[in-house]
Length: 154
Image (cartoon, rainbow, N blue to C red; front, side, top):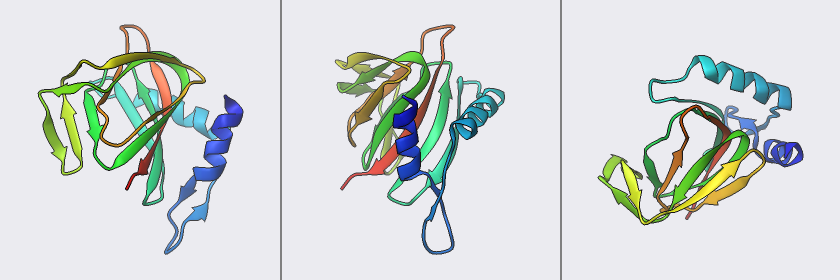
């Protein structure tokens, strides 16, 4: 799991420079420190995240959830999740209940009808293509920490 995470970090970790992206490295210790800082920033909805890099056509962040999130549909971005610790259920597909436009390229909802639940835990890597409804569900008393990599899809 650590080697897979390091691969993602070495290939994708960067920061914006004046005109061109620059190489960046987030070590295991950097990620652990960021995770500790997320605990202090948990929202009333039980989530905290920190963007680690934004490269224009892709970005990645570390996210901590202690409660279930709303349904999301990213119309132009695919998600890649690397589960760092904890566990959750990820519901994908189906139909969004009570959809609203959070932005021109993002739909949110309250639930998914007809989706498929996938139990995910530390070490799992998953991909969610653009346009696919998805929802992270966290059981009471549980949490999940994951790297969320967002990639623009044509």
